[in-house]
Length: 183
Figure 1 (spheres, helix red, strand yellow):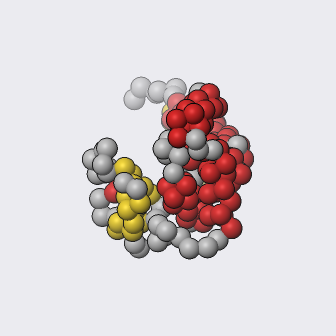
Figure 2: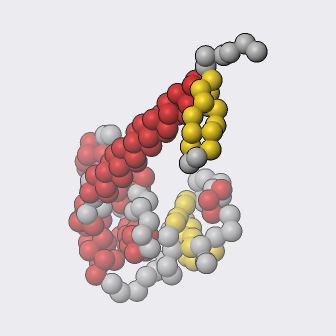
Protein backbone atom coordinates (compact mmCIF):
# COMPACT_ATOMS: atom_id res chain seq x y z
CA UNK A 1 0.00 0.00 0.00
CA UNK A 2 1.36 3.41 -0.94
CA UNK A 3 1.45 5.76 1.98
CA UNK A 4 0.06 9.20 1.33
CA UNK A 5 1.80 11.73 3.61
CA UNK A 6 -1.21 13.98 3.54
CA UNK A 7 -3.08 11.58 5.82
CA UNK A 8 -2.39 11.49 9.55
CA UNK A 9 -3.59 9.12 12.23
CA UNK A 10 -4.51 10.51 15.60
CA UNK A 11 -6.51 9.57 18.63
CA UNK A 12 -9.61 11.54 19.55
CA UNK A 13 -11.43 10.53 22.74
CA UNK A 14 -9.76 7.14 22.69
CA UNK A 15 -10.75 6.47 19.07
CA UNK A 16 -8.16 6.37 16.37
CA UNK A 17 -9.13 8.52 13.37
CA UNK A 18 -7.43 9.46 10.17
CA UNK A 19 -7.51 13.06 9.10
CA UNK A 20 -6.48 14.77 5.95
CA UNK A 21 -3.93 17.53 6.64
CA UNK A 22 -5.07 19.78 3.82
CA UNK A 23 -8.70 19.30 4.80
CA UNK A 24 -7.87 20.31 8.35
CA UNK A 25 -5.98 23.35 7.07
CA UNK A 26 -8.84 24.36 4.79
CA UNK A 27 -11.33 23.90 7.60
CA UNK A 28 -9.27 26.19 9.86
CA UNK A 29 -8.82 28.66 7.02
CA UNK A 30 -12.57 28.55 6.40
CA UNK A 31 -13.26 29.37 10.04
CA UNK A 32 -10.85 32.30 9.93
CA UNK A 33 -12.45 33.58 6.72
CA UNK A 34 -15.90 33.24 8.28
CA UNK A 35 -14.80 35.35 11.26
CA UNK A 36 -13.19 37.94 8.99
CA UNK A 37 -16.30 38.20 6.81
CA UNK A 38 -18.54 38.44 9.87
CA UNK A 39 -16.33 41.21 11.27
CA UNK A 40 -16.39 43.14 7.99
CA UNK A 41 -20.17 42.79 7.64
CA UNK A 42 -20.67 43.92 11.24
CA UNK A 43 -18.52 47.00 10.71
CA UNK A 44 -20.37 47.75 7.44
CA UNK A 45 -23.73 47.42 9.18
CA UNK A 46 -22.65 49.71 12.01
CA UNK A 47 -21.45 52.30 9.49
CA UNK A 48 -24.78 52.13 7.65
CA UNK A 49 -26.69 52.60 10.91
CA UNK A 50 -24.46 55.54 11.84
CA UNK A 51 -24.89 57.10 8.39
CA UNK A 52 -28.69 56.70 8.61
CA UNK A 53 -28.65 58.39 12.01
CA UNK A 54 -26.59 61.24 10.60
CA UNK A 55 -29.00 61.58 7.67
CA UNK A 56 -31.95 61.75 10.04
CA UNK A 57 -30.16 64.33 12.14
CA UNK A 58 -29.75 66.45 8.99
CA UNK A 59 -33.50 66.40 8.26
CA UNK A 60 -35.00 69.87 8.36
CA UNK A 61 -36.99 70.91 11.39
CA UNK A 62 -40.65 71.85 10.93
CA UNK A 63 -39.54 75.49 11.01
CA UNK A 64 -37.46 74.91 7.84
CA UNK A 65 -40.09 72.94 5.94
CA UNK A 66 -41.53 76.14 4.45
CA UNK A 67 -38.92 75.99 1.67
CA UNK A 68 -40.22 72.56 0.71
CA UNK A 69 -43.78 73.86 0.57
CA UNK A 70 -42.78 76.67 -1.76
CA UNK A 71 -40.71 74.36 -3.96
CA UNK A 72 -43.51 71.76 -4.12
CA UNK A 73 -46.45 74.16 -4.45
CA UNK A 74 -45.19 77.15 -6.41
CA UNK A 75 -48.58 78.87 -6.83
CA UNK A 76 -48.49 80.61 -3.45
CA UNK A 77 -51.85 79.37 -2.21
CA UNK A 78 -52.20 79.32 1.59
CA UNK A 79 -54.87 76.58 1.43
CA UNK A 80 -52.58 74.31 -0.56
CA UNK A 81 -49.59 75.11 1.68
CA UNK A 82 -51.71 74.32 4.73
CA UNK A 83 -52.98 71.02 3.30
CA UNK A 84 -49.47 69.98 2.25
CA UNK A 85 -48.15 70.92 5.71
CA UNK A 86 -50.79 68.65 7.26
CA UNK A 87 -49.72 65.84 4.93
CA UNK A 88 -46.11 66.35 6.10
CA UNK A 89 -47.25 66.33 9.72
CA UNK A 90 -49.25 63.12 9.18
CA UNK A 91 -46.20 61.45 7.63
CA UNK A 92 -43.89 62.49 10.45
CA UNK A 93 -46.39 61.31 13.09
CA UNK A 94 -46.44 57.88 11.44
CA UNK A 95 -42.65 57.69 11.48
CA UNK A 96 -42.32 58.31 7.74
CA UNK A 97 -39.95 60.63 5.89
CA UNK A 98 -41.46 64.13 5.47
CA UNK A 99 -41.94 63.49 1.75
CA UNK A 100 -41.00 66.93 0.44
CA UNK A 101 -38.88 65.76 -2.47
CA UNK A 102 -38.14 69.34 -3.48
CA UNK A 103 -36.01 69.77 -0.34
CA UNK A 104 -33.44 67.53 -2.05
CA UNK A 105 -32.83 70.10 -4.78
CA UNK A 106 -29.22 71.24 -4.89
CA UNK A 107 -30.38 74.69 -5.95
CA UNK A 108 -33.18 74.87 -3.37
CA UNK A 109 -32.26 78.24 -1.86
CA UNK A 110 -31.91 79.89 -5.27
CA UNK A 111 -35.10 78.25 -6.56
CA UNK A 112 -37.12 79.34 -3.52
CA UNK A 113 -35.72 82.89 -3.63
CA UNK A 114 -36.61 83.20 -7.34
CA UNK A 115 -40.07 81.77 -6.76
CA UNK A 116 -40.75 84.07 -3.80
CA UNK A 117 -39.64 87.08 -5.86
CA UNK A 118 -41.70 86.03 -8.90
CA UNK A 119 -44.91 85.41 -6.95
CA UNK A 120 -44.42 88.66 -5.00
CA UNK A 121 -43.95 90.66 -8.21
CA UNK A 122 -46.71 88.95 -10.20
CA UNK A 123 -49.41 88.27 -7.60
CA UNK A 124 -48.33 90.49 -4.70
CA UNK A 125 -48.24 87.48 -2.34
CA UNK A 126 -45.72 86.86 0.41
CA UNK A 127 -45.21 83.15 -0.23
CA UNK A 128 -42.49 82.83 2.40
CA UNK A 129 -44.81 84.24 5.05
CA UNK A 130 -47.75 82.11 3.84
CA UNK A 131 -45.67 78.92 3.84
CA UNK A 132 -44.22 79.58 7.30
CA UNK A 133 -47.69 80.39 8.64
CA UNK A 134 -49.12 77.19 7.12
CA UNK A 135 -46.39 75.03 8.68
CA UNK A 136 -46.86 76.69 12.07
CA UNK A 137 -50.64 76.31 11.93
CA UNK A 138 -50.56 72.66 10.84
CA UNK A 139 -48.04 71.66 13.51
CA UNK A 140 -50.02 73.57 16.17
CA UNK A 141 -53.05 71.37 15.52
CA UNK A 142 -56.52 72.20 14.37
CA UNK A 143 -58.61 70.69 11.61
CA UNK A 144 -56.75 68.46 9.13
CA UNK A 145 -58.17 69.34 5.68
CA UNK A 146 -56.56 66.21 4.20
CA UNK A 147 -58.36 63.81 6.57
CA UNK A 148 -55.15 62.05 7.58
CA UNK A 149 -53.49 61.95 4.15
CA UNK A 150 -49.85 60.89 3.94
CA UNK A 151 -49.37 61.34 0.18
CA UNK A 152 -50.49 63.74 -2.51
CA UNK A 153 -50.18 64.27 -6.25
CA UNK A 154 -51.38 66.75 -8.85
CA UNK A 155 -53.54 64.44 -10.96
CA UNK A 156 -54.46 67.30 -13.29
CA UNK A 157 -50.83 67.38 -14.48
CA UNK A 158 -49.62 63.83 -13.85
CA UNK A 159 -51.14 60.35 -14.15
CA UNK A 160 -51.99 58.31 -11.08
CA UNK A 161 -48.64 57.14 -9.66
CA UNK A 162 -48.03 53.46 -8.92
CA UNK A 163 -47.68 54.11 -5.20
CA UNK A 164 -51.24 55.49 -5.10
CA UNK A 165 -52.90 52.29 -6.32
CA UNK A 166 -54.90 50.81 -3.47
CA UNK A 167 -54.78 54.03 -1.44
CA UNK A 168 -57.88 55.92 -0.38
CA UNK A 169 -58.46 59.42 -1.76
CA UNK A 170 -59.07 61.58 1.31
CA UNK A 171 -59.37 65.05 -0.23
CA UNK A 172 -58.95 67.10 -3.39
CA UNK A 173 -57.74 70.64 -2.70
CA UNK A 174 -56.96 73.07 -5.53
CA UNK A 175 -56.20 70.27 -7.96
CA UNK A 176 -54.06 68.24 -5.56
CA UNK A 177 -55.36 64.80 -4.66
CA UNK A 178 -54.51 63.59 -1.17
CA UNK A 179 -54.18 59.89 -0.35
CA UNK A 180 -54.00 57.64 2.70
CA UNK A 181 -53.29 53.95 2.97
CA UNK A 182 -55.88 52.39 5.22
CA UNK A 183 -54.43 49.49 7.16
